[in-house]
Amino acid sequence: MRAVVTVVGADKIGIVAGVTATLAELEANIIEISQTLMSGAFTMMMVVETQNSDFSAFQAELSRKGEALGVNIHVQNEAIFNAMHKL
Image (cartoon, rainbow, N blue to C red; front, side, top):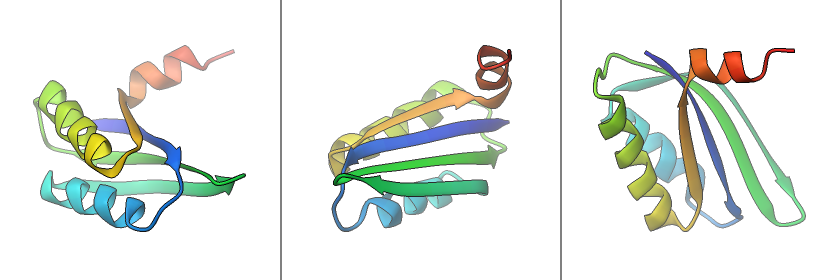
């Protein structure tokens, strides 16, 4: 399964480390990654690939990590993301 993971929140130390460590624990490989800071707001978007067949559990674990880090993490199946953003 491939998923689009977005992370948004106030910038602080440890966001990238925390999110990527959780992805590693979930055996997800980062295919693409982009991050930026905008007026103190941290944003990161990734395309990840995982063999994890329980998408809900994958989403829930990343959501819990987001709460712990004080950021919002949203996970969406890549196919659904692409279909929603087609012109």
